[in-house]
Length: 438
Image (cartoon, rainbow, N blue to C red; front, side, top):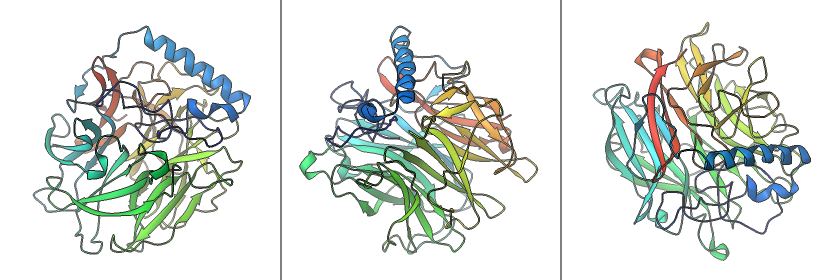
């Protein structure tokens, strides 16, 4: 889920994200420089014309919720949530360092998609007390993020092994750029930056994927497969008449030379949009592949998953995988993310969160904005509810509230740290907080 400026391409899907492909008409992210409108793009409201009638009903629900939101206070007060970044913030990411210098391992790092008078950038924050307090230690400021160009969907990853000249423990940060450039010169690219000093300083590491025009490439995520090769997963809108969007990956052994793209998920018909790929290596050697699928039958950007034995083979691209839902059918809609926690019969739990928590029929559940889903047996166990430590009041399909939140285990896995965006009086801001993981 992401947002980019409107195009003249045929209509389709339903989802959004700060300055990447998905929701309203083009503009500046709320709280960013130059205005208060959210950036527009290919998923949510912009492409509703070709979605089937059941999706129109879903949009009606979202529209009603959005109307209610305009009649309530701008900020929903979570129990103990704290402001992470003093400025526009969206699309937060959390990691714990564990592969670098021993003196730096165990720290929690957080990044945010932000903007100021100089353009779009990613501030880097650090916590040394299990997520109770954060301080800024660096920033990623790509010259392609200058104001007017755009930046979306940043990710943060720590290399578990040496890749080329980048040692084990190197941090990688990647995002999509240039989605707001003039249409006739727009070349959206995923650009990678690297840090070898725990986020204090950053060097440009390359642009392995570049679009040939307005159709974009979005939501990069990294994983190292069993052969030791770095895989970059991302959503690709360059399917032309075959697919509106599909999931693909490219691999590298040195962050210089990259393989040709390999399609990971391609679902027909044309308007179906897989997105938001995340791959996490399980302690047993398998790889957990999480993603959303929009415009898929009766489903509305629901989370799905697959399990790969080696981090390279994810099965048939036409196989949608397994939907994530409780036994009662409750599930998330839009921008799911996952995090691995210790526990369960096999030593690993999966916690998943998304933007809107819905009942089986797709309408928002009473726990919307207050819920995490957990699974104690990845790949086969039932999903159950855990209270979210950061509450967001009635999030809807919008590029700010609870859009693509992030989770991380703290206190040995007994607690969960959450970072998520929400509307405040001065625009979209990122908040964090901790709570029990069960």
